[in-house]
Image (tube, rainbow, N blue to C red; front, top):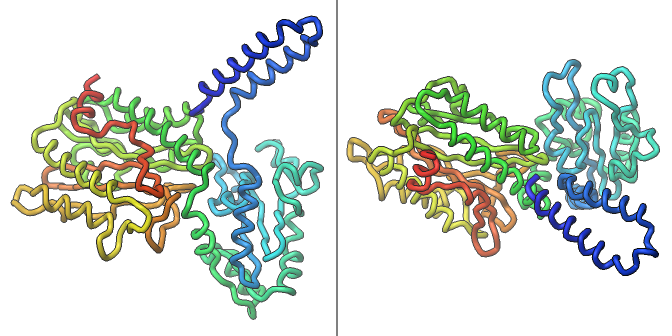
Length: 444
């Protein structure tokens, strides 16, 4: 855990002060009680940071209910497959509004009410997957953070009752059950709920920022571990394996996306993921990888020389990309635009690349920067995109790149950036990116 060592030290210091101050009153102290307190505090110091408190999820639902405009909102959580082969992952919007991570749930909101629906206990399924929470449990309200928790079979009647008082249904248009709602309520307006939730998810709360920082810190350590294995003759998948091991060893759920380890001719392929090639000395390797921790993602890319030294041409292009990234980060502030017409961050980066580098034919390098400068980061590595300018509290990536296939040069430098009231805070700044620093780190 990111702050476990600091917390543990704080608990020990507290206990030391407690013992010293209690010494004059030793005869009056129940030492058995003190021992229990010590064990409790030490155990608490080792507990990982919790997800956002129930009040934060409740506040998100309250904010959404204010947007419903005489409508009801229905969202179903992810269902569990008959024979799941991978760890269950909750639907992102459902988690954002509920904090609930068990399968088969549903959420119903009205302007004045909110209900969580849960499946009943299934003894056979629970023997395979462990005990689940059900509406009939005595502690269901405390565990879920909802005042109203009902069995899932009550959903239809509750929705009918809600629609007797409200005219519109909000549900995600991309989900199949939205089509079923249109069939069941043919004379109702079924509006798309996705933009409403996306609007809420754009600006991150302190607890969300802390989770992204945690994922970023673990990702930085994973990159450093991968760099130590980087050498001619190794395979891309060996570097990817080191990254994945570090994500899990750091206490995270796993990767936020499939790691990209593209060497030589694979470097200019933006989303290369097969990771099967052997790396050779003198090549570049693009490592784009990050962890998902406490449900939140990070996103970091560095480009490194296999063998420890950039060639003069590689360093030349690398400096151009790095300069473009610095120019874009310097321009991050509330009111700036990631892309689109006008003086966007994408345009700032492309103009810098055009002005500072040329290809083998003497033409500017800007045409080799073929994507926008970045995207939102949150519960997904590509969180819902903003339709307007940046605002304080948004978390974005800044990731210019130059991809020249004929030279086998692919260079991308990507950092996670928090938009603040005064500009930008680079959350992944601890991972080196200056060419001299890169060479020193890789050569160790």
